[in-house]
Length: 91
Image 1 (cartoon, rainbow, N blue to C red):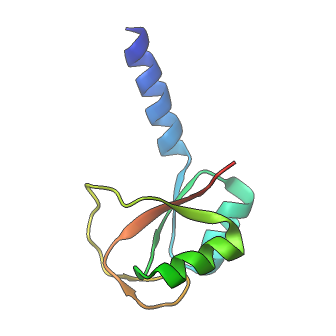
Image 2 (tube, rainbow, N blue to C red):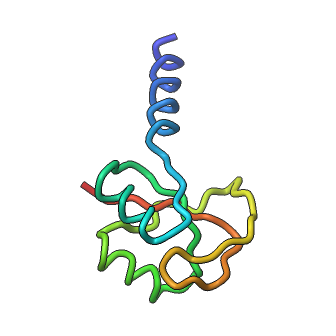
């Protein structure tokens, strides 16, 4: 019972602290002012990942296994993307 409660509490915390960003401005605002995790489109290149890290200190934490494929544009470059990845800062 204790484990179940801890799991549900952690799950709810993760859900409450995961946000979607569709633009660079939204992404930066969430990273700077809310924290938590950000689901955002990324063009798949290491160069773009490094630029995002250099400018915000946020890195890719995961590419979710059950990720819904959706067409979008990379928040940094505007290039096509087929899925969102999970970004966050390390503290």
